Image 1 (cartoon, rainbow, N blue to C red):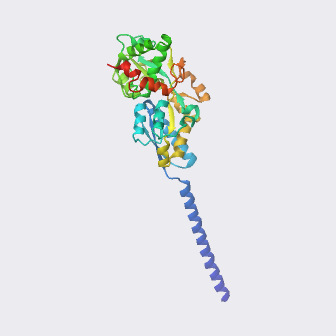
Image 2 (cartoon, rainbow, N blue to C red):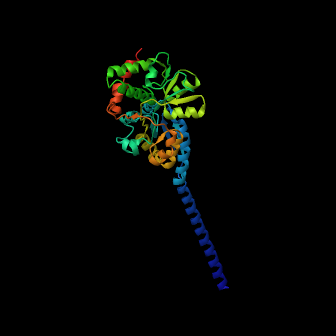
Amino acid sequence: MKFKKIGLFASVTLAAVTLVACGSEKKAEDKATRSSQAKAVSITNVSYDPTRELYTVYNDAFAKHWQKETNQEVTITQSHGGSGKQANSVIEGNEADVVTLALEQDVSAIEEAGLINKGWKKEFPDNSSPYTSTIVFLVEKDNPKNILDWNDLTKDGIGVITPNPKTSGGARWNYLAAWAYADKKYNGKEAKIEAFEKALYKNVLVLDSGARGATTTFVENGQGDVLIAWENEAYLTLKEHPNEYEIVTPSISIKAEPSVAVVDEVAEKRGTEKVAKAYLEYLYSEEGQKIAAENFYRPTDEKVAKAYADQFGDLSLVTIDDAIFGGWSKVQEKHFDDGGIFDQIYAK
């Protein structure tokens, strides 16, 4: 009888130990599951006009990559518009975790407002420009007005569509590409270069606030004989409107270098620094570069660029740092600040 009591006590004790062990194991499993499933995060990318299609595809690719790498769900909200206008919106309180704008100057303006840390150009490769583009002409099929180069845009009877350089980054590249042509044609004589620009802008029918608006004016609304366009925007139009338009490559154009940056003040406040930085870094990955190329941006990765080389035409390109321009800081002050050359030549 005594032996039986001891056996019963041992059985109850063993059962209790087993229950405690199972309970501890379950709690550990639950804790591990919770820790492995990080809280979902969201970021906002404030970008310029023609990148809508690019980031629709890229955001999906990055979300899948981030989920695989971190087991965290990320949602990316997009905002698009003229690059200068978008930069101003961030300065005025539009809370972007990252910006992917048309040019360095617009990102620098946000830096000057204290929202982006100094040295942002060195944060990512290629001066934080993961892809490039250039400026071309889009005309109707068979080029009925025989528009071949920049000088044709100054002729009587030619209707030109281009955005407003005061609000659009693409428009500033357009203006500068025309300036480069005139600089070569007139051997750097500024009075003649300014007269050339004045004649060109006299033919502009509509100054939209952004590049996509200008494309809509030309393609959808049928205004003008020629659209001065981002190369990627022109190729997208050919894709969406086959056999209706063609691209004319001018004798000289400019290497357009869109810039990207983390908006440090916002990312730090929202706790999104890690995912925001990874989001921009992934633009330089093989997948990110292929997505850029498939949306008609010129990839900076040599291997990917070589694979897509046949997609792009050969152009003679100047850069913003060439002697005729001297970098964005000088260009902005000379050409696009209030009272600058653009205001002077466009005054009605």
